Length: 143
Image 1 (cartoon, one colour):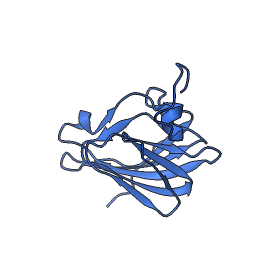
Image 2 (image 1 turned 45 degrees about the vertical axis):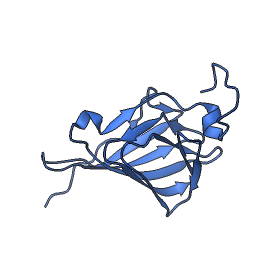
Image 3 (image 1 turned 90 degrees about the vertical axis):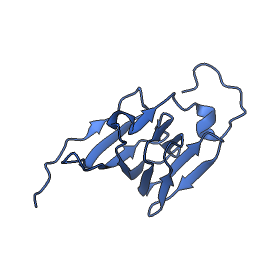
Image 4 (image 1 turned 135 degrees about the vertical axis):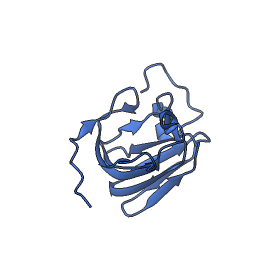
């Protein structure tokens, strides 16, 4: 047994996140046969991920605030502290803090067979998508 070394809090990159989002890694694989990664992720009000998917799916346990999760079909689910959301392998989705609330969740996922495909990042979520207005006209500066 050993106590894992602490990693510093890191601000997530603007290529994959809109707004201020920070991550604290809790666990990453120690050996080649391990796949699980776990992190605490904190979102400022209205901050969100870009569209993405995970090769082996993902569990997200909301610990504080109000979370919003969206899928390509326009479905948006609000999740509250104590609730866990599961996204299946390959499902495009995004996660965000609701407007006016900080949000924190624990993210848990396994690396894919090719670690480079564990998370596949895509385009940014528009304001219309975030607000659930999939059919709304979107101007060029809506992120």
